[in-house]
Image (cartoon, rainbow, N blue to C red; front, side, top):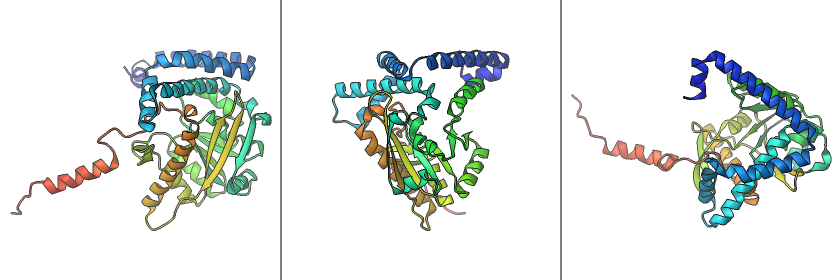
Length: 325
């Protein structure tokens, strides 16, 4: 039985479960905040590196890595996926210290192009689009430290108690507000961007109802929303990445791109979305162990856009002709 179904059938049990999970999370937050972040990050990373491969998602990550790097040996792929788990374990521990890390400039070095720098200086608005590399939560650290108010978009947890606890840790990241996905959120984002504000969202998540773009040589599901928003509001997209250098020290990079604007709006959005993923792919290739390979990013065989188009064309050609009466 799915969790949503259990919630409908047993509302009282769900309330109790949410409360227990919320209390447990708050206790974990307090505990981890007592441990220095460097130690907590190392211990959690080591723990995940050893135990996470027992999870079924480990095989999925290995499969995706084989798709992306078919020339790579099994041993190399195994090392990369274990490195991924190590990084994700570190991210889990560092999340409890996120507000403190924001203020520790010695942990970061910044590489910003001209447009990104103008955003950091508060001279222009933009749409920040990042991906799940290293500790992606810290991608907006340079902007936050320079007083830029950022509106963040995120996927809310099903447990409102746990969601509230984690939101409280991120409040210093998103002074402009942290919005969960929904129709009202879309309106607020448009209003923020059109008024010269800054919005941040993830750009590498799967969106089966979106568009398909090339990604590591295969058709991949991609979210067209960032490109659509940037085009509609006439703002640049700043692609951001975080690279873990050593322990809890990071390199943050910002690279601006513009969305083409022609008479074909849909084509403009698809081209910009493909460009976003081309940049992400190049960055992932530099540090493959720091990206989240468990994403169900790629279209299954027979479901890519080219195949669908070919099947539709074949169906039209082979359809039986019916004489008019």
